[in-house]
Length: 106
Picture (cartoon, helix red, strand yellow):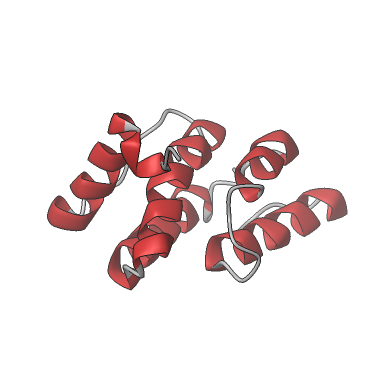
C-alpha cells in the first residue's frame, strides 16, 4: 500500500510546516487550498495539532478581509481527502455555504 507520506512533495511540505512553521505559498486561494491539503491530511494522521492549526490559520489569514475564498471545485477536490470531523473540512463547509449565499469572507 502506498501512503501519501511516500509523496516527496507532501512530506517535504509537512516537514517545512512542522519544523520551520513555513506553510505552502500560492498566488491564489485555490492554489493554496490544493497545496495545504496534503500536509494537512498527513498532520491529521499523525495527530500533529500544531501543524494542523498552522495550516488552517494560513488559509483563514489568506481569505479573511480579502473577499477571497476557495472555489467549489477546489473545496470539493480537497474535501474528499479529509476525515469527516476535520476542522479544515468544517471550514470548507462554511466557505461553501458563504459562496452559495453570495457573501464573502470578512
